[in-house]
Image 1 (cartoon, rainbow, N blue to C red):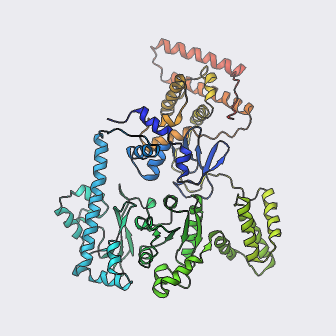
Image 2: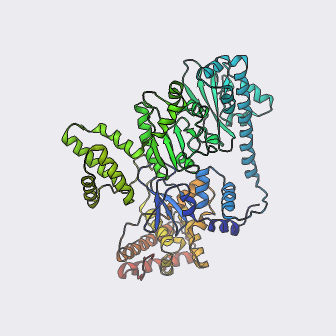
Image 3: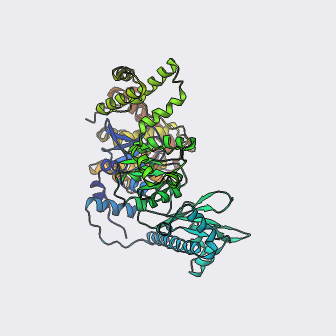
Length: 596
């Protein structure tokens, strides 16, 4: 049993995609679409498009795309049913009791089992820390200044030197090897069988915002490698979507969140009363983590290590945080390396003053860029100020831009009117305007090159969904049978069916595709590039596409025709004659592509 198509469509219609995605991504209207930084891959120039007309999103960089259900599934790591329930609640739609399918029940049961295994593992590690075997680890934590209360609050633990203690403990609770291996807590090989992934490490349980243990981090005791080890990704743990300490920080009621690098930094700050600190999970900050913070605050203080690597990490994080609409400041900890070290030496009050003195992130970026110029040389300073002026163009709000011009001018000893003139001069030249480019990240490198006919068919599907009114005329020339690529043919059949029922609705069509990769591919069919400006150019291109598609369709059907199919042969001959006529006199289209 599943929810009816009508109910699913009602929920989709009541959740405008621009409003929903706008809660996660900072969007700006450009023409008929909205653009922002893609939350599914790191980028500096916005290539993530949200169409209110199609009620779909598409990233021209990484290819992510779909309707409002797809976005929630991808962003929140939800199943379709979980996304449906979330959006139904948002729209105030009551869902009837549903009997889950066997597959859905199995997936839900597996997630619950993994959560139970992690909970038991956290309990086991905590007891190990409290026991005699955890003396070294406890001394380490006490040496870092942690109290018993803090150790308990964060559920810190220890995995002993022997490689199968947790495995034996969980086997006594009757968990089978299959689900234990899926938990990410164990390794397995032919020689040793199943054995613990973490051993001789201080353990840091990682919790989601609902206080459920979803993974673990471990710091080795001694000189073993790697120094820090995290759980691999599982059905309940995706490090790019979670933040260490957020389960506590989200309840802090502070005006901002602090993002730092390590577990101990978060714990040390929480113990000192700064319970709004979080950390990324052993990787550089991701756009998904930035969007996660946006749910709980409008401002983020960046506290990364004060060394060169920490500075680079801060410079990478700033555009990601700004991209989701967060204001950002950078905290200077020098001469100390990290928050834990600072608090140990200077105490809570001194740390509080450093937070209050946090530097505006734009001014921090500008100050860091000074290193590329000889500021003592007149030409070097001139080049720097030209660079600063181009950066100032990034502020679209005139009041905000003028405030920053005054600040920069005052800092670098020039008249604000002089800097303002330079900014305006660059604006007239178009400096600072960034085009949407395909990223050079290799994201598309594994995709097969499209053939010319596939491009033509994709272009036609994009035209149909972008300008539904053209269907009235193109149905005289082509039909679903002229889309010879399997998926394109399937989608075309659905669109032509929708047309005959009185509406073209690509977002509704997408509900019929369950596989996420298939959804992305279908979405891409509605977002082919149409770099044509005038109706005359579009009509000419549309006519060419119709002829190319028909020619390919005739060749395809001819190659697959049964020799005894006389009706099929007659249809082919008729279409060949029609195609010859179109090529001689042209396809007669009288269409306006104006969307208003």
